Length: 78
Image (cartoon, rainbow, N blue to C red; front, side, top):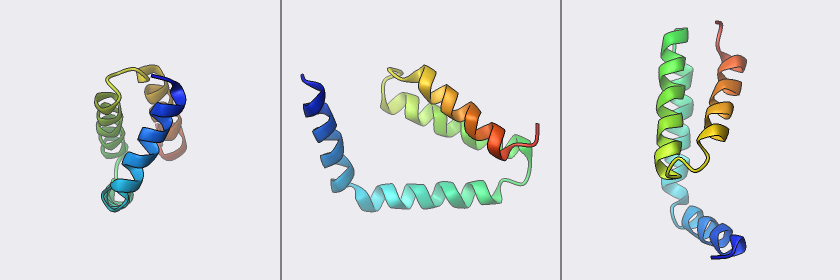
């Protein structure tokens, strides 16, 4: 399957589920705002990375983990 087809399917899926995605993003923002400790933010980031890896079948695990670590450096205190 050409990459363009996959990209278009992803865009279509995102558009079809925009309300759900927006709700998940807001829940993530709320949870992150409520994470009072480094352990809390680490746990939240670990769960988000695990979810992303599950959805993508671990095809982008290295990139997901790099992104997780980059975010942790920006918001974490350890």
